[in-house]
Length: 161
Image: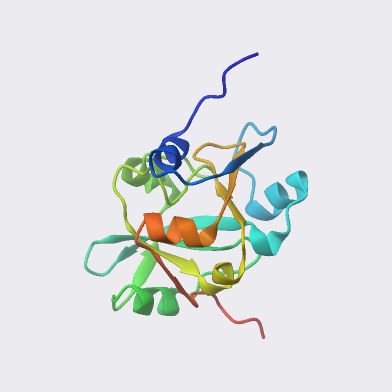
């Protein structure tokens, strides 16, 4: 039996004694989070995507939100004390985080950025985030994650009309 290759995210969780489950899916290139949730039979409201943004000051920030929702850039900026933030261009994701698009996760990056998780996660016992590579998801406790990365829960999504 082939040994499961651990990602930096999994090594971080192991080191911090945070329990998690791994779910994998067949995928050769980026697919959106809604597709991933459907492939794995995960509720979309419990499946979170990771977005990286750069603030006016030049600092980078990590935002996690349900795959079906959209980041509100004004709320995101306010949550990290910036005048404004812009999403990082896809071409810069690997250089800044060490992860590829579709495999980016808030844990085990080159540098731990201030992380804000949408407040709906605070109500969940478990949620799904990227496992650090395309085709891998990690299921873990949002409250354990937020504590380990010194993150916080806030409302950072656009309200549907």
